[in-house]
Each structure stands twice: as structure tokens, then as C-alpha cells.
Length: 293
Image 1 (tube, rainbow, N blue to C red):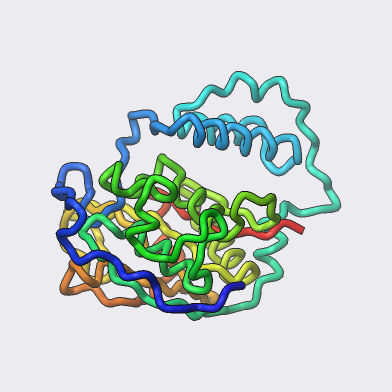
Image 2 (image 1 turned 120 degrees about the vertical axis):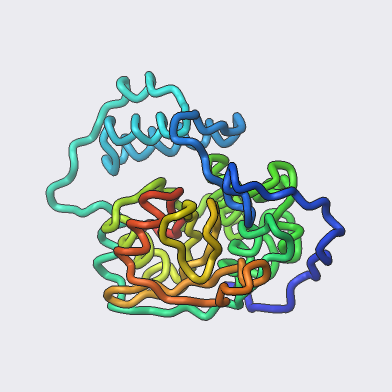
């Protein structure tokens, strides 16, 4: 694990063209709200990686064919090749890797991460990634120094190009993998779970923080005239935050929007089940770290 150091300076607001935020699409902080009835558009590289991930999970017996098809359909990807895969029956003497890790996680754990306010109004994704990478000041992919402006480039989150760190692009997991693992094969994997159930969300948080020692990136959606968290305004908001600690019933978060919303605290704690129900299961999802045996 790298030693934390000062980050490369991020640009002052205005030195990178700002995207006009909109109440219509939820791009108020740099997350996004994807319409449920539209396919999620991936680059060819991301689409191929997602299909490969689904196929391998079926081959390894960690995902059923039905589950793999649901995953691929969520991203508007073809599912025809799933039926031809020999599906290994679950091993009755074993438990899926993620469940094993969660079961072995300590009852509570809080990681030390440096809070980073987002440098621009659409940089919640880069700021969240920067917080998760608190102990990794230099990228193993290209030796870049950690900063929001670097993480927002096309090499990583593609935030500048897209005007947001979009959930459907899968760039958060790709960025964390590139930064920490480089171009090497690693047992440290970054898993993207869209709209997880409350129990799956808890498993992801406990595995990532408790066993792997890395904060999780949470993609939330807050809707107008509905509950909001951490002093956010009453509007449609797609947003990224970092989950860095948990207890038996709650999760601690670091919110980069403290720089754009006067009522937002830099850190806050919320009941796990309620947060998942209101803004994750009904939102985008969670990107979490898992170390394979």
C-alpha cells in the first residue's frame, strides 16, 4: 500500500470548462440519473469487459445464467452467448467469495481517508475516487500523481468528456483497478453492483471496508420532493460519495458536495438499511473492492 502524500494541485474553478447543471437530468454535482427505460451506453472496451465479467462469473459458479442475463440487460448488452456456457452447479460445501469475506469482516471498522471537496460542480466522481485512493498517491497505470483533474481525464473516469462520472460507463471500477493494479492481473477486484438490495449493499460495504481495507464508491440518486441526505437541496441529484466506515447498523460517508452545498457536512453517518432503500437500491449502486482467495 502506498504512503499518503500531498496531491497534485487541482485547477481553480473556471480553468476547466464547467458543465451547466440541470434539474432535468440530475447532473447537479457530477453524478447522473439514467432513465430506467433507456439502455446504458458503454464504450466497446467497457462492453466487452462487462460481458467477459458476466461469463466468467457463470463459469466459476458465482452467478447463475439468469443473473448474468439480468446484469447484461441492465447495460443493454446481448445475452445470447450466456446460454451456451456450461453452468457449474453451486458447491454445497462453499459460500460465494463475497459472502465469505463479509462474514469474516469485523463487526465495525472505520478507515482513515482524507476528505476532498469537489473542485468543480461536476467533479463528485473524481473527488470520490480521490478519497478512496487516499493511500495511493501515484497511479500504477501511468505513474500520474493523484488529483481530481487527472482522475477526470479519458484515461480514468472520462468526466471531462461526458460532463459527469456516469454510472453506466463503469468507469469508476475501471479507474480504481487501473490506479491500484496497473495493467497486471490482481486478486484485488472492483465490483459494480447496480441497485443492490439492502442486504447486498451491507455485504458490499463490509467486504470492501472490513476485509479489503478500501472505501466504497456509492452512486446515489435523490429525487425532488422526496427524502434527501446530508443537507442536500430539494432537487433531482445524481451523486457520488465515499463510504469509509461501518458499524452493525450504520455507514459513515465522506461527501465531496460540501464545496457546493452550504448545508452539506464533509462527513456524515446514516442507518445502513434506510440509506440503501432511499438512495442506492432506488439509485445507481455501489462500486466495492473484493480480494479473491
